[in-house]
Amino acid sequence: EPEVTQTPSHQVTQMGQEVILRCVPISNHLYFYWYRQILGQKVEFLVSFYNNEISEKSEIFDDQFSVERPDGSNFTLKIRSTKLEDSAMYFCASSDYRTYEQYFGPGTRLTVT
Amino acid sequence: AQSVTQLDSHVSVSEGTPVLLRCNYSSSYSPSLFWYVQHPNKGLQLLLKYTSAATLVKGINGFEAEFKKSETSFHLTKPSAHMSDAAEYFCVVSDTVGGADGLTFGKGTHLIIQP
Image 1 (cartoon, chains in turn blue, yellow):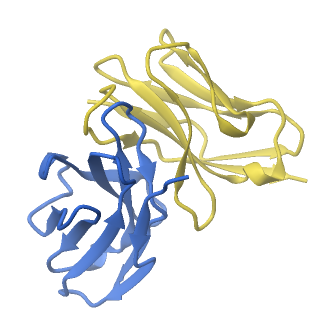
Image 2 (cartoon, helix red, strand yellow; image 1 turned 135 degrees about the vertical axis):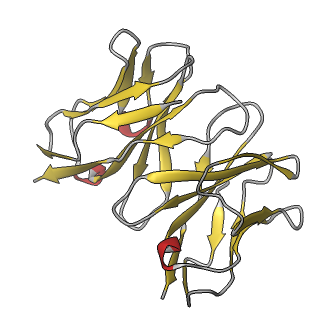
């Protein structure tokens, strides 16, 4: 069964550094998403992406964040200058145009020290 | 604006007994509702979804949920709990049936299965 994959599974970075989280969505899906889950808190929507542009973003998704689909398979989330409060599990998801089912990857745990 | 309230942060049941995880939602439109499960150190897996078709929705692993508009509820049930059901369960709402809108998650209910 096709699945969303994410790399790395765990990323440790120092405050102020840039990080790029990578996702490979399910191949025939057209909608892509990033969510985050701070430890002990709920899963929060960050951004959705369709047709090579951002469709919707939350107030969390400020100028420090950007997303890109650099090729036909990868979908990335970049944090330009990480802060301690960016430490969280980041989930990528994708869905196709016919359904509203979002399929999630296993997540990348980002630790900012 | 949409929101989800999961009424219990933890639910503990004995193996073989029924499971009830409660969820209430708030939505400006006719919502789509979902339940996702997260096993330890795993990603989020879709259990079931409601999208304005049948109000009783059957999902994977014997779970089902009933959409009750009058009560704005979408409670998750299972007749007989199994040890493998121990996980975190999230009730999720979306205001749209399709498209690229983000999902709104509840805080989650931790389901504990006692042997």
